[in-house]
Amino acid sequence: MPKIYVLDACAIIASLKNENGADKVENIFISQKKSHDTIIMHKINLLEVYYDVVKRCGEAIAKLANSIALSMAYLQKGILVTSDHHEFDIVEQREKISFYWIR
Image 1 (cartoon, helix red, strand yellow):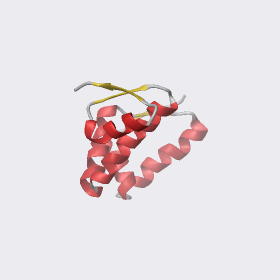
Image 2: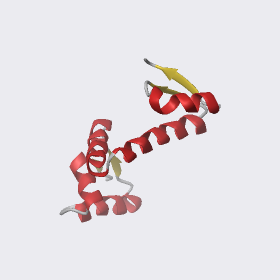
Image 3: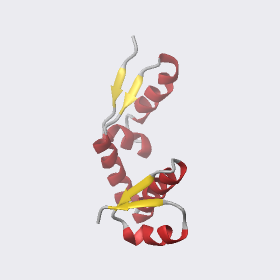
Image 4: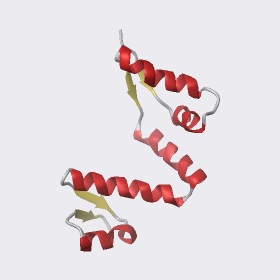
């Protein structure tokens, strides 16, 4: 019977930093291909991973998240919901991407 693994932020952080236990997390991902286990993570825990990466690596990573959202909106022909005028006003003027400004 397939298992359902629910990942906490510390599991992903351990894997990213190659900390003690990283091998166990990596084995879950490797074995999932054969076992058809399910791996899930709540977005709040993912946010915790993001916070840890920004704290360690700086603001450049935060800009990466904006780029990912922008790319996703472009590829899906979607509307990017944001309040980040500082980053996206220039994009709205130059590109064919729709924005829904919440502020």
